[in-house]
Image 1 (cartoon, rainbow, N blue to C red):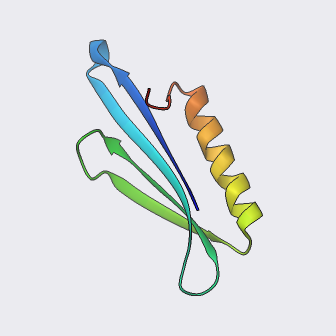
Image 2 (image 1 turned 30 degrees about the horizontal axis):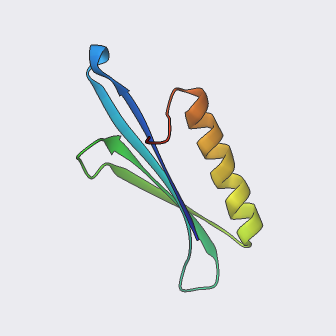
Length: 77
């Protein structure tokens, strides 16, 4: 469905982080918003939440992306 990848890199702070938000269907007819975050090059951590409709899942993903962009994460160029 949709996948968004954001990075936050600051060499002065030794910071190289990623944040990925993906909206996908599960086997039971629900829509999953999966987010994965961590240091670039690593597996990171993962959390998933299910939603009954695609529009609710997309809205939740959009809110997560907006919050991360306010904290300094940017899309790769």
